[in-house]
Structures are given as C-alpha cells and as structure tokens.
Amino acid sequence: MVTGIKPDMEIRERRKPGRPAKGDRVFTGVRLPREYRVAAEAIAKRDGVDVTDVVTRLVGEALGLPIPDYCFPKATSQQEELPLNKAS
Image 1 (cartoon, rainbow, N blue to C red):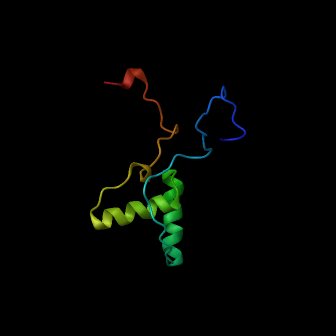
Image 2 (tube, one colour):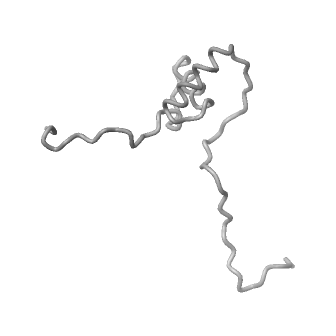
Image 3 (cartoon, rainbow, N blue to C red):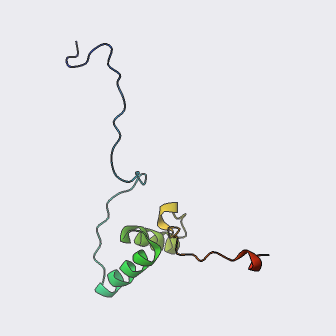
C-alpha cells in the first residue's frame, strides 16, 4: 500500500523548471588557449547562445557532422522592419 496518496488524488507529471534538454550529450572538459576562449565567448554573445554551443558547432563543422539546431544564432528582435513602400 502506498501511503500519502489518496485514491481520488490526481497524479500529475512534475514539470521541471529551466530550459528544455538538449538531447544525448556527454561532458568533455577541454582547456583552450585564452584567445580561443575569448573568441568563442564573443561568438556566443553575438549569436545569443552558450559558449558550449559555439564549441559544439565549430567541432561539428570541422568534422563534417550535423550541427544541432540549438547551436545556431537565436532570432533577435533587433532586425529592422522593412517599410512596406520598399518591399517588393
């Protein structure tokens, strides 16, 4: 007998806070030359992604492997709207 659960209680799946999972990944610690890390941080800031995502993208490109969608730049609202009189 399970205690603490009443027969009429609804059992719901617990929602976890935070971002969605990025799939099957494995931790890979690596020490980069300082200038590599600085450059990766700049790309990450520019693209709106984590440094890990930048490194994943660069390794995938170097190996000719598919790049996960989460490694690409995030859409921003900084894009200028094209005036209707200039649209074709």
